[in-house]
Amino acid sequence: MSSKTVAFLAVQVVLIYCAYRAYYKDDTGQSLTPEEEIISIWEERIKLPTRQFKKVAVGLNANVDLIVKGSELLRMLNISPGHKLDHHELNSLHELQEVFAFFLAKGSGAERNFANGEDFGKMVDAAERLSRADWFIGGNAALMAQKIITTFPDTQVQLVGPVGPRLKSLLDQNMQVPQSSRIDKDEVHMILEFERGEKWGDHQAPVATRFITSHDLSNARMDKLETLFASLGSFQPDLVILSGLHIMEGQSEDFLKKRLEDLAGNLRLLPSTVPVHLELASMTKPWFMKLIMEIVLPTVSSLGLNEQELAFASHATDGPHNTMYKEIKGQPEIHKVSDIMTWLLKTYSYGSKNYPNSKLTRVHFHSLTYHITGTLNVAWRNERAAVAAGTRIAAKQACDMKIFDPTKVDIKSPEQFKLFTGDKLRSFNQSEPVLSWKTGDFKFCFSPVLVCKHPLKTVGLGDAISATGLLFSEYDAKYADQS
Ligand SMILES: *[C@@H]1O[C@H](CO)[C@@H](O)[C@H](O)[C@H]1NC(C)=O
Image 1 (cartoon, protein in one colour):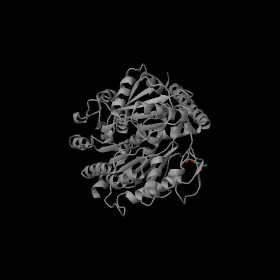
Image 2: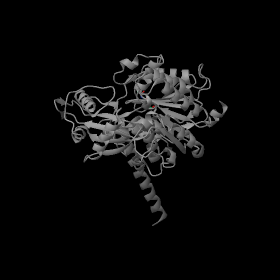
Image 3: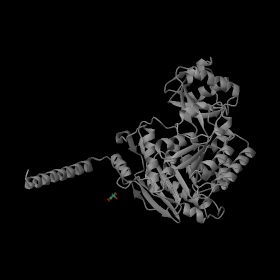
Image 4: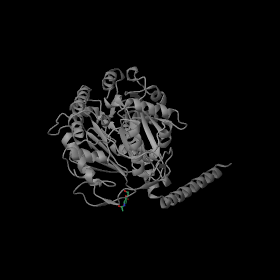
């Protein structure tokens, strides 16, 4: 071949390639759905930070979830359908029937403590004899630990909580669980499912949902709290993640106050360079929420919560929009959420009037349709990527998909919104899904969720979101040294 021919062929190849690129770009540019466009923007912009967390310690609630068909379990226990009645907590298998019938007929999910340990044991034994009984990792701490170790293989994870033999076998084999964290008998949370239209005696379920019950003393007393802090010295984590405070809610006020002070006391002894994240979960007693905010919040660096918990926090401590908790229907308005986040940071964070030595510098809010992070700007980096990574994992996990399928999700973000009270009215723009703004020293980042149309996995969604957001965040230890 002459050199001229080679040159000619090369030009041909380049021209064909350019034509292909132009066509391809034009074609996809016109046919991208808003969901596809958001996914491609996320793929392009979600980058891990320069300095990633490498050793993460997670505690404190851990258990196994045992999922069964409720009616099959009751039959196995020789319990026949009877009348329905709600109880604050369960004291017998007879009351189990009444409460199960009550929530089946009502068609709403519920969780009740089973106070009678002997009858609860009978229930677990019967469940193990069922043909279909599925065991899963349960407890926010165990779920977060598992999420991190399976998503970030370069990160070492240590879980401390009541870990029984069954839970140990379900956890990733690289998960570090100190011997002192192990218990002989798993804490089991029974999840009794019922299907839509399912009949139980005279009662019929209008929708599919689940009734949850447990007799979980280890988690309710936070038994492994001291074990967790004793293990940190040898593990030397660069990030600590905590959850499970909500499980103590049934205890007396004195006990709760003492346990929260034990926790805060231990947290104050940690090096200031190690950030601590606290993930909240559903609570019903305002005074308990208030105790957590006043005792624990100033000793953690980062807080994760959803719309119920954010509204409840404001309600419990007289913050802004504090009637939202009672009025909340569907998704809360973006500007109201960011107002409460700003108030939370201003009131409880580092340098605040009442808590000048507070460690708090970050809040991660997650709801069904959007997430927002708010940070003291100098203390955290990469938060645009972090908030987007949290929204991306929400869709992937809810739909249980490894590769993003844009046809399985919908944008549910409001078309018009304000980012904070006093902001101009904005229109949602799918070409610019991740937004950020500053209020004083705080930086906020917003990302819409692509909501899964037919969710398959909703257990532990908030845990997966917060854990992922943290692993995409970078904490500035230099900042902590100065404070
Ligand atoms: C949406 O965002 C893109 C990218 O920033 C910008 O080019 C476009 O003008 C925006 N559209 C509207 C209607 O603001």
